[in-house]
Length: 94
Length: 288
Image (cartoon, rainbow over all chains, first blue to last red; front, side, top):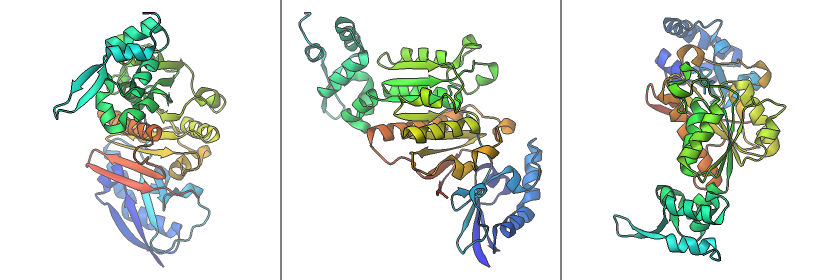
């Protein structure tokens, strides 16, 4: 079981009131399930209060990086000690 | 008089500015630069470059050169920067590039100003609603700095036209509002070996990174280009007036650093500025 750090940024940090947490997980699926269980409902509640409908789990409406690269690029799902998950909202405006 | 060269004209027009600390700087006025340009023909930019090479600073760059030096200002005046999008980010980037003295600015945007742009898009005014953003921006460049030239493309940048639109740029700045276009720009910049300064905004937050051709880039942040949302959370929470300026200002600093070689560009890092809580984060990006 690897000890990893989950960091929230930008609006997600504000909504959740949390900078970072430490989790124990063997793989990404386990880690994301814990993140969803602990933070998903609160995040969606806060978003809804601001008029934003977020559907699905946190990973469905967030950008999530593992050690600085998007999960969408990764084939392996195992985690190692000291890994960092970075989670933040998609901001694409200009 | 016709036999004199530009250097002689510049030398005759030079003044001495005495700084508060007593240090003296040879300077030349905008009026003199304009007059020499009219007399000798050519571009005001060339007169300014010639003056700087003689150690004479155009007054307008006096507050630049303390930071970037005369050589830095010459490099900027000799450079072309392409700005893709002339809205919130792009409009502010263009304004600052003109004031900084970037020699040539390529402005790419097929959109026109609408009322909902007025809160944050620097170039928009009540009087130019309905006008092409790129055309307005080019006129603004000329009003700010007659030594800077601007080329406009009233086109939406696509994969198909990106090389043609960007090929002459030394640096490309992101003033876009959607990810698919940003991926098209990044791909073209990698092909053309041009650095790309990426920025995005939403609410009181924004983020940016500088991507050189071999660097970690957009896919590290957003995943692959074929599974992207067209727009992000800003569609719901909006973009208040100061947020584009916050990110655009830093994008321009990146451009200046890249061209002058001064400082350290934000390569392989995503800088996230959160004005809501007053926090700046830097995430190291890694290529997979």
